[in-house]
Image 1: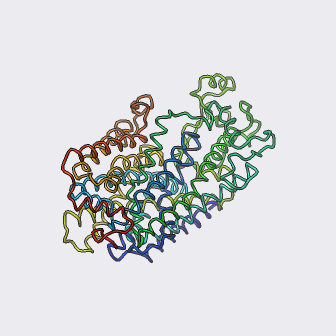
Image 2: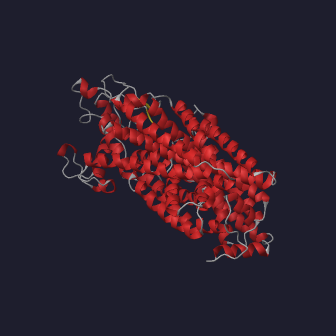
Image 3: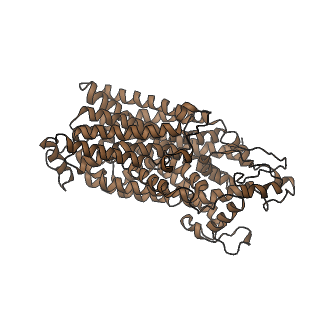
Length: 597
């Protein structure tokens, strides 16, 4: 066993053992513990847990990978996800906590005085959450496939077993405390290698300042900044500049908006604000969570840039076009051989020179130049964006314990969010569907059992789809945000701020937003039904006005708002008691008609 394997087992295995131990120690004994941790979580602890719930595999593993290859265009993810959290904290969380229920469908059912509205909300929640957890299971699979050097599919199966063990047993109470531990692991794992690599490449050890810091390697770049050096390297190989906008402005705007309002409609994040004692605690925990989230989100752009620069210079050794001088330079880097076993990285030495030529062979002008070098096409035939953060320390030749730490961090991010999302599914099935609609008289024990069965079933479905995802982790999660934006966000906003919104408008609005967005996603993404085939529709040139499936949620939200608003004005207004309830939710001090706990 190599030194790296020993560190991987010690750090990753040790962290997973801690999560399971915490789950046993804090396992849920009642439905209140299972759904909202007894509503006794301290605001700072809730801020930490919310941050871990929020920093998913998409944020930890995939976002920097997207930034590495998309550059400027990936800023939509940073802006959308952080801006959306502010929107959630200011406009939704305090009012929903003041209402005092356990779940989002429960709020919608009572606010719109309709069991049908509650059922539609449950359907929306399950669709959103299953889509979201696909990305998390993909992230879990990437981390475990690297740990055990096995195929992605085996890695997902291992992750399914671990999530099943601690999330199903403990509920929100166990998840909260494991998420606190997971946040500590993931933020440490994210920042430590960023500091090390920043010191290797620039004159600063503060990752947030590294993009504009002077690039130091080789000492012959005339004071170029890291960002300028990266632009120079990638354009020399026929790629667009890292800082250049490649996507159309309309799509970038709609993607940012979709991610922003989708954030504010995510059930597994909203429910975290139900776990504190008071409305004031919900506001306080939102502030703490935003602070904790900012640590990672301000570091991600630098990690993406450094990963792309290190990757390019590792593969394309020596000056562009210069033949390999010796075997040591020409050999394939060890980190690439290790990642090749996962099936997430592949290459082919087309011209037999012992190197891997990585360049843009789709650029006609550069293809002519490449042919003069004796290159016969881009030899890096496959590289999954989601490996970049985990592989970055290996590419930079950091110590083995740092490589293991990053793997543990990626796993913590994926597991923490997967558990939170699965709990939202369990609550929707057991509390809203079973207890709230089908068997109101069922016992607390039966309700808990139903919740655990629902969570286990969701794990198996999400695991299968995680093996057959319709894109990278961040892309899949973006689809979930679009669905949340199109279905739940408009309904919650109107429920809080529009006393005239009624049940018919809410039901038709949710269905219109959800179905229009799902139709667009299935039409262009194809999902897993077409695995192994290439859909001509899944090309930017065929998208409506160049709008990607990940960005369509903003239009879905507009459809939802428009339908709900128009139908509510054309049909009977809500009962007076409901209109009074809407007013009371927004008052500084709630009256007796608003449920308090």
